[in-house]
Amino acid sequence: MQPLPAEQTQARRFGKARSARSTAVLEDYVELISDLLGTTGEARPTDIARRLGVSHPTAIDTIARLKREDLVTARPYRGVFLTEKGETLAKRVRARHRLVVDVLLALGVPQEAAEGDAEGIEHHVSDVTLKAFAEFLRDAKDRRKA
Image: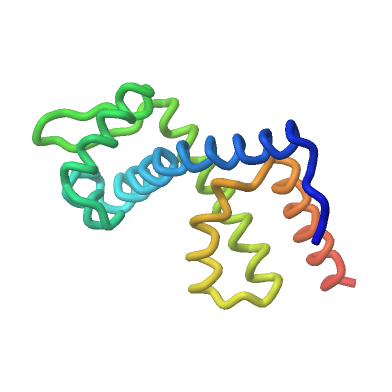
């Protein structure tokens, strides 16, 4: 068994994980709202709830949180829309998701498993690790060309 890390180091790691869990829900909602708006032209709370597998009241509560965070606006009987801040977050989350999926696929993980696993990993991976993932993919692509 490895020795425990220093208390401050371990506390920082656990704090990062708690923070990631807290923002993961918001990120999932924003990404889904963007996808729904892009494909169907509307993001209704009912559709959001069904696609995320949550109850309608849970979706309504989370949408209220997204409003407080200035990530969405909602109009009665017209659905939910991303603010500029929400759209920026959705693009960042989507890019992070795609990068994680691409790394998993490059490692030989089947498509469905890679997509599912990326849903969890994407919220917990650091910018340093994302940069390493991008370099790994770039290097792998260069090796295939050579």
